[in-house]
Image 1 (cartoon, chains in turn purple, yellow):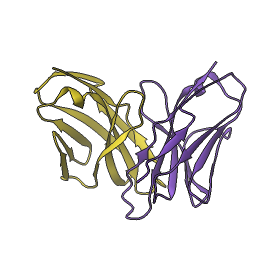
Image 2: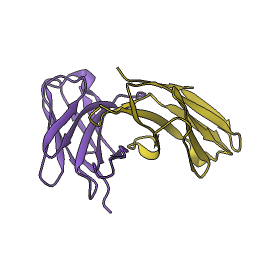
Image 3: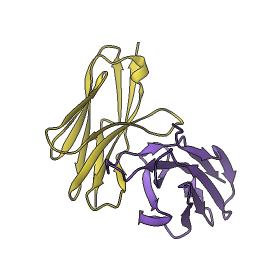
Length: 114
Length: 111
């Protein structure tokens, strides 16, 4: 069984630039969620995708956007980067089958904005 | 708004010294309460799901319990390899899959 994979693992951007983070979900999982984790804090929900549609969104501005593809992989795009966007971005996959709710996380993408 | 508060922020134990981590929560209609373990620089790893007050789950040296307002993660005779940050999260019944996390308890177990 293949787990959740994310790329890139680390990246450095400057303020105002745009970034795209990628995620492949765990085999058999049809739902992908994205979380932002600042240093020393718990993950904050950005949004969730199910069947290529956004299925819930947290308190993040529209410059955070996403996509889910037919193979259930996903992208997170952030435009006009700000210094406070520096964080670990976590992708989590889950399945609606059984509806148990637990999340399976990737290792994350560490974004530094200078 | 759903809220999760974990205490203590940090806990240092000697190997074999049992203790408990607390997770207090408020949520409109609990769908599930989740415990995760997170090692430095890694993503969280799922441990347990609890659905209703009175429920208990066990895995090796860890036992999770749930009441209507809080959950405890009991660690019995911990080993150094149990050192990690433990995260608690809740999902509301009408939350469209959103998990609300606490800031975690960082556990250090000294040999």
